[in-house]
Image 1 (cartoon, rainbow, N blue to C red):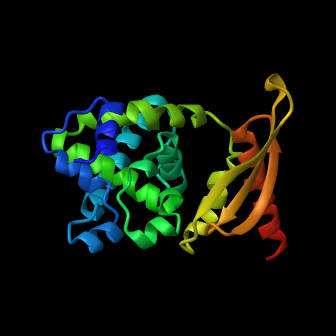
Image 2: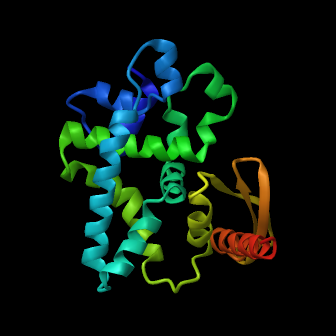
Image 3: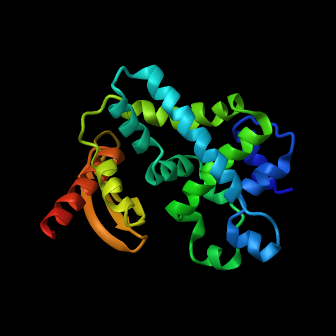
Length: 227
């Protein structure tokens, strides 16, 4: 039994009936192949469905918009980039069980891998404890982030960029590369990477979120000029 995974259970105040489900949720296919065990892929499948339903219900209850708007907002909140941000917010990567090669290649920081693991975590909770118990994760991690974006105008450049690259199965990652100024007047610089290596754009803002949005906006402008 992994001590680190026990800490994850404690962080969300969960008590699994079958702890092996939580362990399996952290098992990437690279680890599963090396150790002849089942990976988290089946749990990821059910977690994806649980998250879709939970986010749809949250949006339905909290904004009075037409179906098309609800559908678009749900897509934004369950896309790979959003799942990656949920996972990063509680350092999910540190709990993962990875194969040697994946560990050496920085698997704990890969957006697609973290997004899949977050869905697998929800899937494990649902299978073991039922739908209501998944709200311990949703209420602590997902819904607060959605609430921040709920009434923003259509200047969500990060979502627009994600939609643009998603059809090509590309991954995006935002990194804060500098912080300057005194504590009450911080200025952040963000950089957006495609597939973990290609620098696409940079942006500056008075918050990390604003800097990331400006980096995404700069990237969209760059892509438009290159068409």
